Length: 421
Image (tube, rainbow, N blue to C red; front, side):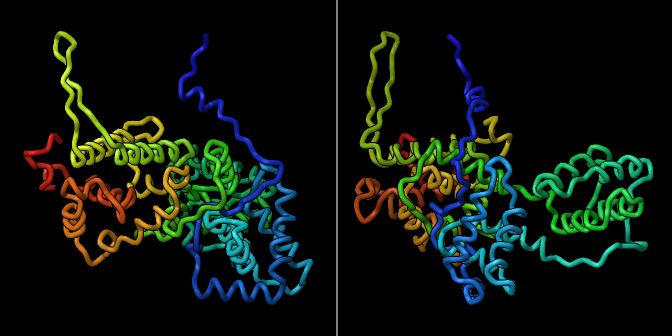
């Protein structure tokens, strides 16, 4: 009998896709990009081409997409071509993309990638660049790198091809900077290794830092397809919270999740919250103490002790993530775990949104300890820790967020002599 390890099973995890590519939004509520300019752009696009035609045009483009060769640049180019066929004066691709998001034909992650592709296409440059500002690497490296640039194929999707070129250049000269790339592209053009169009594409890619892009459209489609195969979404349950702005970042919580984690990491994080929920909602927890004769004593934990145990186990599991081979030393943010748990259906959208409305927790004017004190005091008795209505799993989860991030020894409940934990 052959036994397969988890790693071996992952290698057998086949990337399954439907016959037609779709980017239908099934998780996000109001768009992260929702604003006055967002609404105006949609209105301007609709004045040039009707809303239904914009949707149909995008669907037509997707019917021709090979699931194994998804490219944001190609999709945006074909989408614009479809709209120009409807109205030769159409010049509101951004508004057209916003319109697709408004009707949930795409989500914010796809929208961001397509907007970046459109920004790339619209960028105007004055080339070729010359002058003393160019910073060329040492000559011995230049002789090796310019032939690599000459082999660059602009016909292959830039999301992958530019990253591959950058990777090859680093193998030759690992100290390569953006300024070095600028000079190398000029050098390759001067040596006629590339034509003007290719030179322009490479310089645009450098300016947009495509080599630093964490998530391509192909990669996102693979992630979302694998997750939906493992955890099918029932209906279109959405959350306003996951589409909201992540703290101090120019992206939503859900965008951050997919940019930073693989599908397996998302599943692992989501299951941690799933186990936490089971523990918090468990009606009974016991400790068994055995003696040498295999007789045992049963100690039944009270509601507060069960709560504390769930918190300690959460802390332990979060710390162990760093040691997990799938995370390679990274420790996820707590809210990444919450977003991941919603993504695999372990938490309902309304529960996630409920958590985001707890003002005592999110109020930026409250200090960290003030937030903790309010919620710890609220749930500091046996009567309230059972979390009867109007409380529930998410308010308890908000307490756990605070409890889990308070350094050991600084929480007065840690030194409660009446508690086993």
